[in-house]
Length: 306
Image 1 (tube, helix red, strand yellow):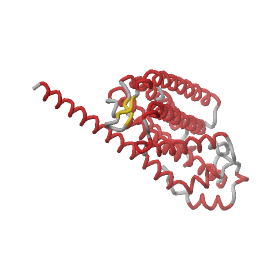
Image 2 (cartoon, helix red, strand yellow; image 1 turned 135 degrees about the horizontal axis):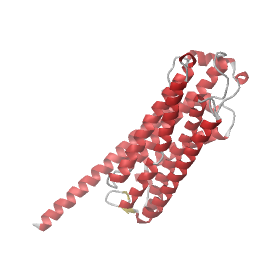
Image 3 (cartoon, rainbow, N blue to C red; image 1 turned 180 degrees about the vertical axis):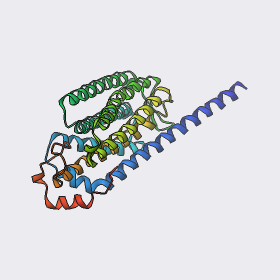
Image 4 (cartoon, rainbow, N blue to C red; image 1 turned 90 degrees about the horizontal axis):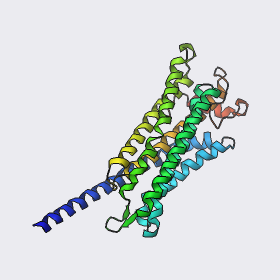
């Protein structure tokens, strides 16, 4: 009788673990498909607006961030065909660390967007930079500490053909939750700017950027909260369901936001009624904007990226 109960419990545990792993794979695959499909869809615009921009550190950071994420998530999608026991302990910590770092870099690009709304005021930039640097440093330190604790105990389960972490991986939860401070700061600054700006000064530019900022905030906050809950409460077989998907969706949203900046740059160069000033990290002066670019922008003026 006891053996029968023990066998039933083992089967239920096996079934639950298998169900969680299947859920993780499908959710991660869904996020990867969204990222890959959006990258293919936006490739002509990215080539026109980003690749053709003058060389700058931020341009290469953006491209490196996006395509490293695509490459790594591609490997993660097919990792069951490539992974071996010896690489198991390195794969899981690397995936968590790169995901957190990649999203932090995206937050840095968003920092520039909020400064644009405030006309690049030094005080606003200093506040946002201090908040971003503080939460990013803290999150990375927490992630490194958590990885140092659970990584030695990660094992490769041959029954499920996957890495199995211990309960100590819950220590990663604060690394996803702490950056919420920056997201809340971004929302406050964006809403404050929208309320502070006189109605007659509200342009399509400020309206579009404010809308993008709120959309970005909602997506990122939802993903961060989801990951914090999964890492803290979910079984170890389910924790990566949110990590891979969140990374893919965060890269997708950030990429569209940056391309939107570039479109605004060229609109500014072809519309003398727009205020002068730096709009994106890839800005170039209006004198460098070709007539063909201006025609393309006018034709696409009604197109909504977000």
